[in-house]
Length: 433
Ligand SMILES: Cc1ncc(COP(=O)(O)O)c(C=O)c1O
Image 1 (cartoon, rainbow, N blue to C red):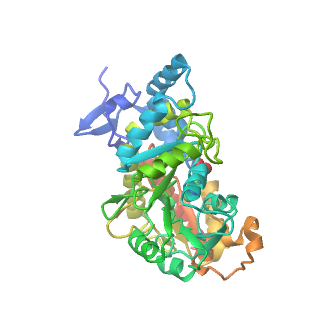
Image 2 (cartoon, rainbow, N blue to C red; image 1 turned 90 degrees about the horizontal axis):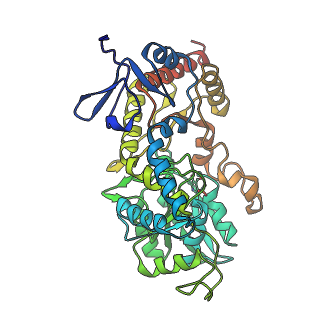
Image 3 (cartoon, rainbow, N blue to C red; image 1 turned 90 degrees about the vertical axis):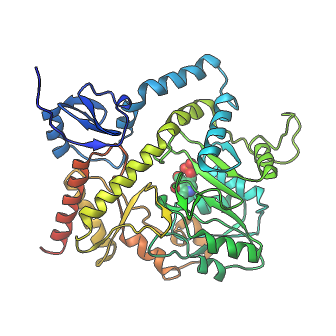
């Protein structure tokens, strides 16, 4: 029996990528859900889907919904590895390195066991040794600075630019000393740090530049892909990342054949072609074949997923632009943001107001996260460095104001509308309206 087509959501995806018998191609590249809807990880009848979208909790990330679109591809890829029974440094890892270096526009890519290891190996390859100083942003995930201190070097913090949350190049300059060996700009939340002044300063002062690109795979800075502008760029495949594996994983990008050789050796106990001759102390840090196989499948979808994140961000921006008391994310000129996070500021009442808004969202079934509640200079881990509140005011203010909303690719427009409405209502209530 013919049922009138009801539309509940659209996305720029190919129909064969979805397991929904009720789905149909509506126009060039556009997919409209009719009668039945791919909702979360199940295909449900249209009437139920509408009700569920209106009432089900909205998580920060729905990896089960993503898996529902990839199940066959992933299982076939994993099967290939299981049949081959080669688990470390095999054809999948090599192919992923080739595919990712092409995707990012770097000459080489070296797979390692995590994004943190990628930073440690890249810093070590840059010559960072105990007693050296490395300048990092005061507002980032702790791994950036942890990698520095794990090498016995000193993380030296620099404040951020309030607009992008990224390291302020002028602040880097203020902290350079004769012991400064390197700087690690982080492309936080999916947007590039302001790299031209960082690179110019590094050239002038003889610093190595390692880009922490854990959160920004596929982002663009004035025509260049993030992770390819410094001497090395690092990636994380932690499951929540834009390109996330089914476990830990990481990669280092470089254009230097010498660094590539060195990094391949460092990830395998300092060995070269002969695995039983170690030229120097190294690590055991390799990306395994099962992870590489999963990541190769996902890489085929990454551009589409990043585009969906951008579309969601535009929708949030439009819905939230006139809501008083919040600032939507700003995108620097000539940059392409890949929205690993959609991070706003809730201002006018410090952390108490932001936290109250977050609670009100949670009461309406909507997840949100504070990335990051404590700037690095105030982390207990770095207490010995002797910092105090007030040292990095922009980082400290960000920590009290930021709130990230769900922005995973599989979100439906109706869910984004629900989040925006709930946020506006929460802010009204907080303002006594
Ligand atoms: C900015 C940043 N740097 C480094 C890392 C470390 O990556 P991993 O968790 O893969 O070690 C992460 C992610 O967790 C990150 O977000």
